[in-house]
Length: 392
Image (cartoon, rainbow, N blue to C red; front, side):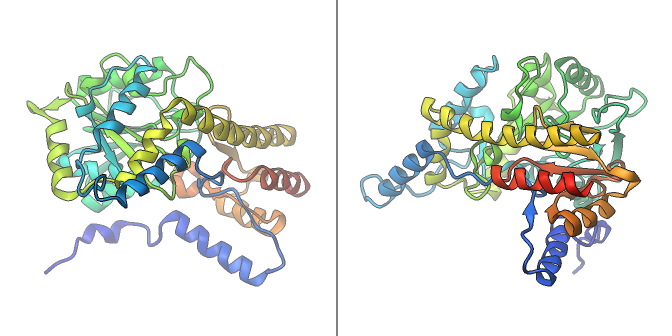
């Protein structure tokens, strides 16, 4: 018996586990201090009433023998997949319900989708980046090439024709930087993928935060994308499902490699390794896309957008460079006074009692930068910004 030695190539601790440990140690030594957490991207507002009502009805159904449901479709109940088709139609994107796969979240799908790809594939990943993209490929032993996001390109790297890759990760709005690709920029990526016979894994978990109507919220708004891209969506930030768990993957029927439809491979993988999301959760997810649900979650998103604006207004007043915030719940700032990411983390924790996320945890190009999240309560964000003004 041998273990998967690729795990030895991972960082010893997941980024957010390291942060949690440091905060716990500080809180233990300073029990009188109020710590404001603007680091991890967890929501704070409760589920919208339309969602709660739908889940209550579903619970009642499960308690009645005439409406009880056992195993569901591994691909997701048809009512939710049809609701998603309707949601995408408003983006001028036509989908078939058989192209949508319901899951317990985008994070799971982004890792699990690798099951359908050979370990010999070369992966192209932006830096800085959400750590899951990197770690899941290290676990499989794939070769990784990094594309540089930096201050000069506004953390939106574009294709390099001198680099050849098989799998490409894109996230827009980006985590951690909050930067958003334009349609023209995404078209360059789609053209690159088609020329290289590559597949784009497009993470659209934060699409609902895009305010600028000229910016795309789905890769399928780009010509040719259905022939080269898989899109992942999530209700975690869209509708507060971080603790409820529901997301989806879209694998278009047109997407084939080696003459094989990738949708068939993903369906085979899911039917073998996944038994689906609970009926109760899927009924709640369906309610997200009703008229009442859309109005209610829009109010919640607006609350977080106001938090983001307060953070960016504060950074502007302090003369600190940043990106994100306007079309994203994340604000990516340049550490003041030449501090490293972890130095600024410690400085904020000790001097302002604010917890953020060191940019170095997202890759080499994240060094010297820092991520703040707009998902806190309005009161906490305002208090944190007052503390920031006093401390920086």
